[in-house]
Amino acid sequence: MFDALTNKFNSVFKSLAGRGRITESNVSDAMREVRKALLEADVNYKVTKQFCKDVKEAAMGAEVINSLHPSQVMVKIVNDELTKLMGPVDSKIYFVSPGPTVIMLAGLQGCGKTTTAAKLAKYLIAKGKKPMMLADDLQRPAAIDQLETLGEQVGVPVYTERIKDAVKVAKNGVKHARKIGCDVVILDTAGRLHIDQEMMAEVSNVAKAVTPHQIYLVCDSMTGQDAVNSAAEFNNTLELDGVILTKLDGDARGGAALSVKAVTGKPIKFIGVGEKLDKIEEFHPDRMASRILGMGDVVSLVEKAQEHFDEEESEKLQAKMAKGTFGFDDFLKQMKTLKKMGGMSSMLKLMPGMGSKLGNMDVDDGEVDKMAGIVHSMTTAERQDPELIDASRRRRIAAGCGRDLTDVAGLIKTFKRSRDMMKSISGGAGGGLKAMLSGKTDMFSQMGQRKIKQRSKRKTASRRKGGKKRRK
Image (cartoon, rainbow, N blue to C red; front, side, top):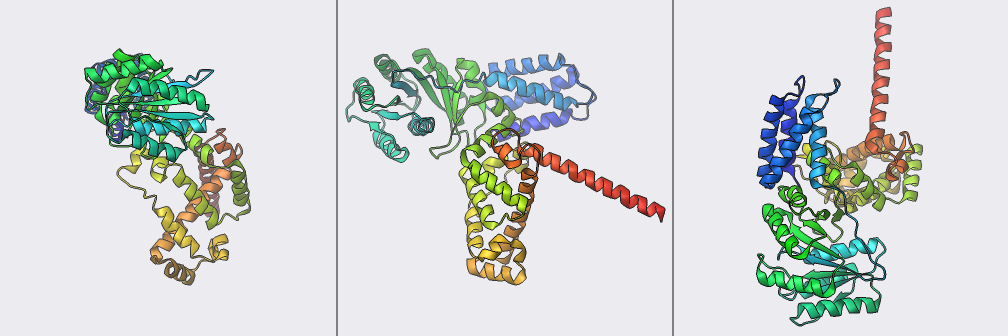
């Protein structure tokens, strides 16, 4: 997501690198490129104009610290202004008591409303809620069947009626949810290929009939300005409480994410970042700004780790690292967990500086299955002590799993690198891996401390070596 915009911002910041100070001239040049990049990303023209004006005013009023380059100052200013543009943070769903809380989803056909309903249901289950989905899209063929199928997948009841009265179905559905003890109703309404009077009248009548506590507009981020224009139209009719942007994992130019809050005045609540039903995230403007500028998102990375890594397992892993008994079985378990967290590519993009370096590189998650095949061809002793694997053992392992020798050698090399990285984490200050997964520290600071120590040791060894030569 936002790859083109990220690259453009990075080139602007590089052009400022090496300048002695920020001047009106070089800021104007930079803003000309930023304006062009934003318009190419399909950001609203008025939003673009105001954003560039705000950045320029902030840059000219900023005191440039002597230790920083102009490019670093501009990164900070642009990051702050992007956060303001997409903020403030408001990803909270407001629940009522007694329930059920009615959440109405509106939007054009094809924007992903039905799938988003299921994703939202799965998200609410994880939050301890008991949701029910209400199939009120009575226009699109098979919309009811699709919601029923998704309901089975996430384990959520779905209320349906095979009639054409959307208002009646909505009223009956809310009554049914109250009867069976569900505390949240997710109301999936009908969409159209374009905004028309009939569509607006229907969603307006449904809203008046059930008085939803929250109305979210689901927008396809791939459509850019069209998504923002439809958001403004829906807001005039329904008085939206927030926006959910879908398909941000695709080739999204970013225009909708950067424009919709400024145009409608309504916060972006959630973003869809994949096809699977767990691929929905709370929207955080500061984190999104960091991703757009290629600075990663360590907070989201740690949160994902906390969801998938068991604290007790992490302590065991840390103990194995300390004893030097971390083996291939442990490594494979970590790789499988990483796959559950969204895959190698998505994790790397959350790491500072990694998004821009990845380029078009595709880190294939199918490699995990290949790794498993190779590991399962090893003996128990080989898995526990990789140093036993010599050339003849590598040939036997390769033959056993049907892979090339280079695949086996590559896995062993990857394992050793990962083991060294995990050692640097588990041996760092602040409690190591456990502290990282609790959010008290991050692996980058720990690895940085490790590197500083290593450089210090190398410099000390070099000075000693130089002293010995001089004495000779």
